Length: 405
Image (cartoon, rainbow, N blue to C red; front, side):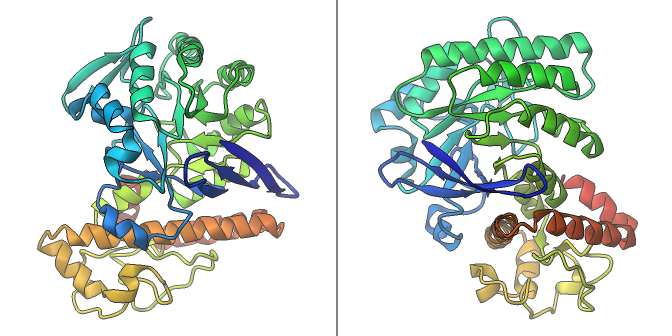
């Protein structure tokens, strides 16, 4: 794996870069980038045949949890096949392994002891030691993988938070000693809602021989208003020439907050939860929010629309005018409304294609704003307009917004 920084924001830490994966297809991912979150290596609703409808190469980096495979083929079977790329038939995609169930918004491990992490999986609870985890990584052969992390909620005690940092560093050392020849290791950084512990963990991880950094522990009760302090405490302690990934930041405002702190890679669980609930992203990509008279006030907060609403029962327009995604080019709001209300899986397929395409376009405009030296203006304009329309939205919309965080 190779990573290079191409441009910096003149008045901040935001940056663009290029991530190159050293597999047979030499995939190039421009950062900041959106990782496509998967279940067992594939998006929740998009089949391999439909993945070509997503922008390339922006959608070529897939994130998965090795723990999802505990109920499937064992490590030896996957290894004999030749790894996950061959098992899934995704030879032209990069795979990044993260020991956390991002889709369910659960911490990487729900409990720990001195030996390893305890994971809740669909087939029961398992204690995973560093040796067990690295055997899984060796058999799956991902392009990138994250070391085991003891991620804790924001409300834990100071003693428990300190213990989580100590365990995460110790597990990182174990993963480094057991690391296979193939695959780039991202060192995990935790510390909860403590600036001191975040700094201690990031400084220790920065001393290790790792290819990048995974910043965990967000999305478990932490406040978005205080998060910038913790993000900056971490990124200030990390070398600038290596990529940084974060989990738990999904909303557009949270993504912009992470990029302003110097984060390069983000997961896409926000898209999954929107799609599952029948929402479609419609926010203007340039941040210029304007009320569309065709939008129903009870079904939209001007960022997304609920296509289950009866307001779209006879709406023959596209989800977003001018959108070039497969869904908008071929189907109407009325058709998707029908599919949702008769519980056809095609509804989620079409919605995930659109939502992913829309969010990838959002990241592309962010990269352009950084390159042009306009990121802070872009960010402030987007957040201000978004805040105004959230305040104008109905109470039911605000409740729905909290459900898809």
